[in-house]
Amino acid sequence: MVAYTGINHLAMATADMDKTIRFWRDLLGMRLVAGLGRPGYRHYFLEISPADLIAFFEWPEVEAVAEKDHGAPVKGPLAFDHVSFGVAGEEDLWELKARLEGADIWVSEVVDHGFIHSVYAFDPNGIAIEFSAPVAEVDVRRHPVVVDPTPSPVTLEGNDPQPGKWPPPAPLTPPGERRIHPGDGQQLVGIISDSERPI
Image (tube, rainbow, N blue to C red; front, side, top):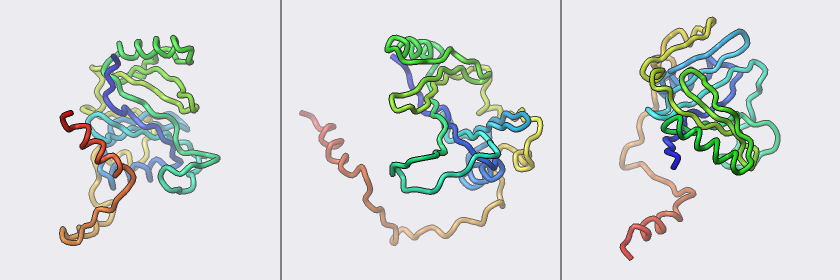
């Protein structure tokens, strides 16, 4: 069986890498762990967790999409490029490739990106997907590296979140005033509890 390990990276697009790094690294606290670049192109990766990354392509002419409610259907341009699912090793990529080919679904050859090996395909909805296996000897999480020959000034500040770039946090809501509001998924509570009970 395929050993999925989580989201290797979510690949998004931005017209302003500096603003993006300020938000994800400095405000949200995610480390910048890799940056690729050449004239007119940047592709940077930030660490969501020890196993998960979010990445951004910098395309100067890309336009931000209008804000919308989470999960609401849209028509027209989107800000989503592809999703990469992490797998435990290269053997999993070959298994996935065989499964997709066996189902007569287009899948790429295995691609060597230096720090990951990947295969690409599309889901039935046309969503671009990638499966990525780590390259053990190239760990950008433990050893961050940026090979962009013209990194932006914000990038040159370093990999770790930079203090003082945003106002201090608002005061925490006191425990006695905290309220947790119901949301989608509450209907699962009974099902999960019942499924854990002995029959």
